[in-house]
Length: 349
Image (cartoon, rainbow, N blue to C red; front, side):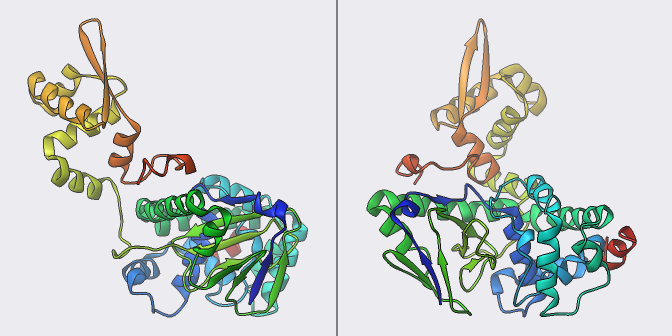
């Protein structure tokens, strides 16, 4: 059992991640990748990534075993939603932290020879790790980021509504079936017996798509406290959500020409009717008709400048086009917004 002890000060310092954390999603997806095939929703993703993973990213499988300890430095406690910023933070880890975390990992499994160079913080080893992390995100996460973000955004909206309806008690009590809030202690079903005293540091809550089974906390109690917990993924299997898939869905929802009009307005800053007509090879009258419907639906904003009508997306239009929330949902808005191991080894010689 994991017991997280709150003071009155800590209750006022609970923070909810503003979106999916790329470092945590990378680490937890690596758990899925290396573990048993028990998650039906992730089976297609797992098979695809396992058979096609870039050789430069494969060293990560040695750093992140499917069970047991994974190095804390791979998931910076301050968090970010920017994959590149996450990599930069990981690569700036102190030598002491690298040495400590790699040594802890070495106590439970045999490590490859390049792990010694990484533990020493050698520049070439850091670069090799950065390459592995970037390649992994590009291949295993980026094509699916729209669906991942949508699930996390939906969870954030639920947490915000819970807080508005019942304060901190409602927020914490509904996190996950394995979590119980017995003020002032948050009890989490856990494979080890541990107490975490927040001592005024507060707690960052991180909803995660790839977290499964139960919530997870950092091993090192001296780091800023974090609790990562599973989101409800919905009923769909994880699948690429690129522009082609979104365009097809928008075509069915809005009609092909109207969807193309919306996409063109997104591409062209302050798009005019004539410019949209030229790009889509339709008449200005048709553009005007489609723009009127899109404007009435709240998807675009139109402004007349002299004799020319200029169109821009509204936040709602951006959300629809992206297939996910374009920005973090604030609590006050919820009612309205119902190198391969070898490659890495060579790089650190």
